[in-house]
Amino acid sequence: MVDEFKIFVDYDKSPIPIIHIEGEITSEADEEIVNCYTSIPTNKKERVLIDFTKTAYINSAGIATLISLISKASENQGKIEFSGLNSHFRKVMDIVGLTDFVLIHDNIEQALK
Image 1 (cartoon, rainbow, N blue to C red):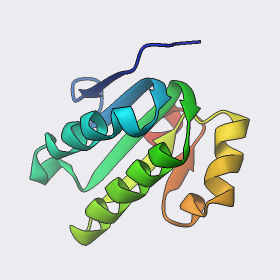
Image 2 (cartoon, helix red, strand yellow; image 1 turned 90 degrees about the vertical axis):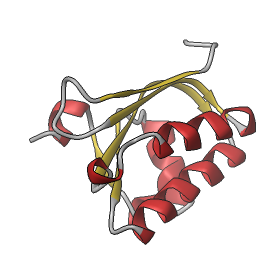
Image 3 (cartoon, one colour; image 1 turned 60 degrees about the vertical axis):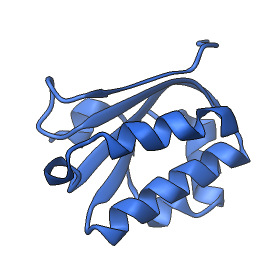
């Protein structure tokens, strides 16, 4: 598992921005996640994919951060999509109702089809 939190946006390998999140998504990661999303040019925010393949942990503060991003995207007619959720994270997203507001893909390749 990845312990250290890392986040970056990949524009090069995809027609849409992909935010890769590694490590733990907690309140300590909130500012970096929001800043990363905000750094994406407005004309590229129509569809943004968040990749959770290397995410080790998400707590309630992390869920709140994701909800905030989904709200920001929606206000600007954009969409947030998720990929790489393990079965536990997928269940958590379902329980808190995020699956009603985002498309969930098994992996990045599926999201880009």
